[in-house]
Amino acid sequence: MRVLVREDVGASGIDLLRASGLEVDTGFDWTPEQLAERIGGYDGILIRSATRMDAALLERAAALKVIGRAGVGVDNVDVAAATKHGIVVANAPQSNVVTAAEHTMALLLALARNVPRADASLRAGRWERSKLSGVELIDKTLGILGFGRIGQLVAERALGFGMRVVAYDPYVAGERYRELGVQQAQSSDEVYAAADFLTVHLPKTPETEGFLDARAFAKMKDGVRVLNVARGPLVVDDDLRAALDSGKVAGAALDVFRSEPMTDHPLFAYPNVVVTPHLGASTAEATDRAGYQAAEQVVAALTGGSVTTAVNVPAIAVEDLEVLGPFLPLCRGLGRLAAAMAESGSIDRVEVEYLGRLADRDCRPLTTAVLLGILAGHLEEEVNEVNAPAIAAEREIVVAETKRTSARDFTELVRVTIVYGEHRERVVGTTLGRRHHPHLLEAWGKRFNLQLADHFSLFRYKDVPGMIGRVGTALGARGINIGAAAVGYEPDGEPAADNEAVMVVTTKQPVPPDLVAEIVASDGFVAGRAVNLS
Image (tube, rainbow, N blue to C red; front, side):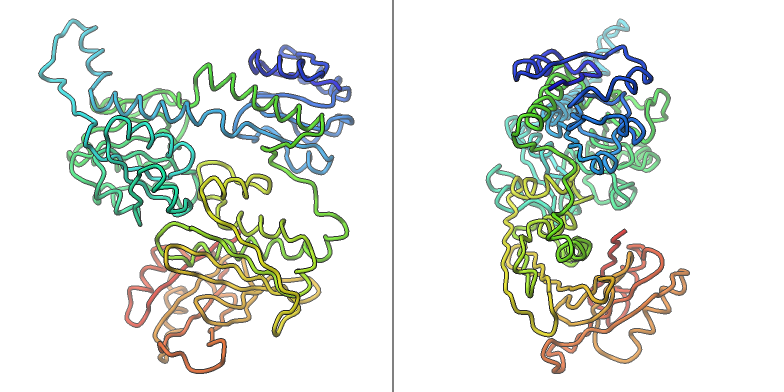
């Protein structure tokens, strides 16, 4: 079989391909036209970020079976088109985690000991020992927001410096914190209150953009030092400047920025701000590791091995498609809803029950869809249909699947339960009608029958007259149109023992978190959640 190495991915990756018996060509200097002309003769291709594998190019790749991306992102690959042609797309998601963690520690030490300022001062002919006195790391508290692969590696290294580490990530089981000797926080506010140094390792999502804003800085200890080696948009730059000006934040270290490349920024003028040009993944070892790991996946795909980092999977088998296919969106929605319903704390266990004729099928794709709903968009690493079970296991989240061939009241049911600490949160759904629309049947212990929509909100409240109208009025005041609404009832039809009711409303637009908080803060309301499935 023939493999094209389109970009320089390092010698070790190319050597591995050849050692595996594959015929390897290099096309580092090929033009896009030459690539399009010759791609049809290759079974595999290894690329970095410069080569665009778009639909038109893939149409010409008649023999292609695998695309190996030497790096984390696959933005330069049309994954949907590759899947349509039966081409496996695999990346190297762990190639830069050590590098990113080490760079975080480098910035942490540079910030603590004023290394860049000291270097610049001495080179300018000044000896300013007294002005450049720093702080020790030992016995200081490092707060970590986002406790995935990179966050955990940072914690291990910080513990080696004698630091106390407190971290928050609801998508890591409590056992993992205990194994690493890290204090598990129950909220980001708890991290803010404890941290002498704070580092963020979060993905960029609508929920995390601007995560470190004026409100967050106000909750931190006076004199905190803040680091961002993750995503530029996580920090509100103007709010960080204000916190530095006031002395609330004693210093900051930034490797990433809202737009890049960035060579002129107001924060560059602050002597207590350390900056680097997005070097978190930039080491010779990380580059070589990415090429080698991607080459491993290409070899596996072409020699019958297990492609462990594929970002796409074949379609559901024809014989299962009719039964399982319509339940994939439902399961993903139930996973997202269950995660949103859970209070603060880490997810320790996910239980998925299949009732009815679903129980006669291999439901692993549905369980994976549940995990995608729970995890996707909340972790620093990309989560997909292939790696979701492995990522859950890595974070020590136990996944249990049970089946029963009978279902009361409905032909098929899916129940998803999230266990966190001593608490359990269950949601139940099914599909109805010839178009298999997903319906929510149970949440917060109450039963409904409401078709799920892209945007919906749930409210728990004291069961007294007028509560539904108050929610409608609050939404209307923000220009948010209600599509449908339902009030839940007790499973046995009896009056609620706690005199509480639950309503679900679907809306045409997302309901912002501050509006949910405003409604819940009003008299009679107990809790509220807004969930977006789109």
